[in-house]
Image (cartoon, rainbow, N blue to C red; front, top):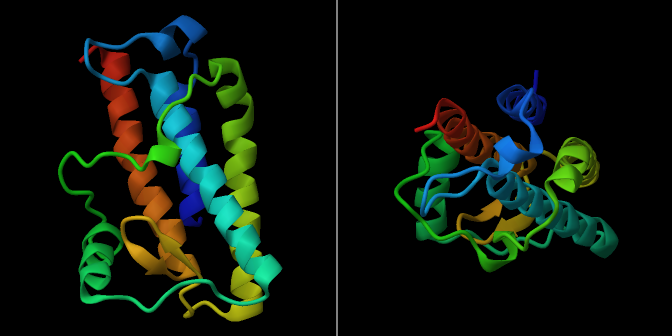
Length: 166
């Protein structure tokens, strides 16, 4: 099973049986499950748009990686570790999307992301850095998939803690 399939299953399992009220509940100063889902959804739609631009351009859009990019990618993607409390990029911050919309669209958006990444990979190869991540820099298709798995797993753990009331 690939990273994005595991991601989709982990999210579905984490939110299974939650009501809209459950999705909106959160401790003071913490994101709710709905806010976490919105953040993930916005990151997935941004990835889809980036890969669509790559397809439209007919060429990879990634810049050359810097040492900082290589180190960040090695930690986040290679080791599967997201360090510290980092601010989410503005375009992935919550805008108040309805929880019902998120429940209905997050799965199909993960599927769309899987498809567009696969299209770019088929066109340009699996070892080519295709588009830039806003923090990690240029990534290959496999690195993009694993990044979303690592990032999603981080947030699924938060959802599970919210479910437990912590």
